[in-house]
Length: 97
Image 1 (cartoon, rainbow, N blue to C red):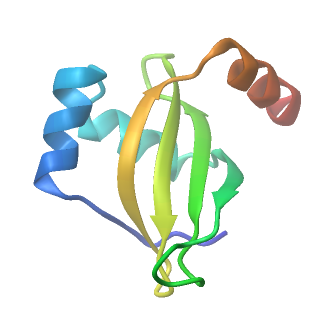
Image 2 (cartoon, one colour; image 1 turned 60 degrees about the vertical axis):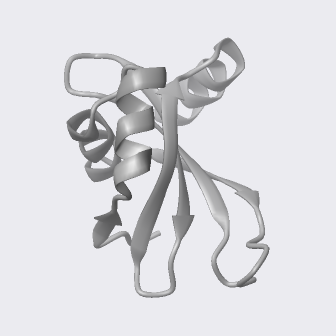
């Protein structure tokens, strides 16, 4: 999956920092360093814009899940990000080794 740019909404950036203690820089690093991407669900309004989860490791070693909508123009609208849970960490470990 080719992602050329990330789309950020101010309220999402605020939520990431306040609720999940995840920075915009951490998400950007994960998305730019070959994350393992998994399909989550089809788009509700636009069937061509589905929701995905990207599993990856931030620069300082923190493992994150980044949820995004993949737009038709190869851009990703960031929805949320948080630490990987135990099940996701196992999946990521199997895919990255």
